[in-house]
Image (cartoon, rainbow over all chains, first blue to last red; front, side):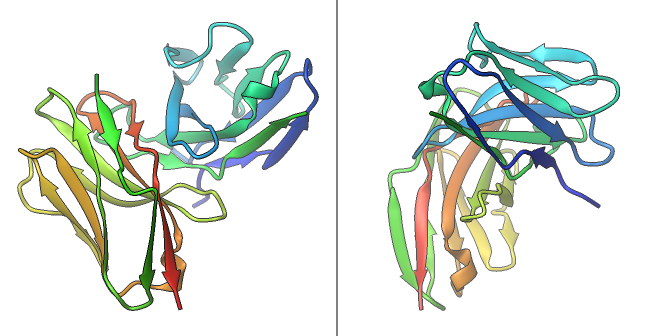
Length: 115
Length: 114
């Protein structure tokens, strides 16, 4: 039973480019979460999605960041016009139900480096 | 505001010894969950142990156990018979019952010495 799959593992972008991060949840999970981890910090919530719906994006920066979870295919976190401050590890997690009763299962993260 | 505090940025322990990592949290909620996650150099976040606040009994998972003190809002992790593979960052996390946002502490870097 494959866990949460994220790709790419490492992504390097120049300032101004776009970054696309992909996440396939665990089999049977329809709830996906994105977290960001800045160096030497804990993970911080960004967005929560169910299939085709954004449930909560209160942790997402208002500009340049967007997320989707289409009916078919992985969830995508998209960062437009990246800046150096976007450099971080981005983690995707999934759960069976959308509440804390069901623990989050995390992927290995995507480390984004903006040069 | 809900916060999670891990006051030990780094710790080390000899192989086979026992180590305790501390975590305190602040909330006005009564129903919530607490977690310890391990992040080895591979960067994967691995759930180590989970505690429901309404349960008085401390959770245990093999060599890992917690000391949950609800009144003191303390949730420490004890690792017994430490192994080299336990070397990792350990994050304490909190989630209010019925929500999905986890609040993480800043982590404790644990090194197990041979």
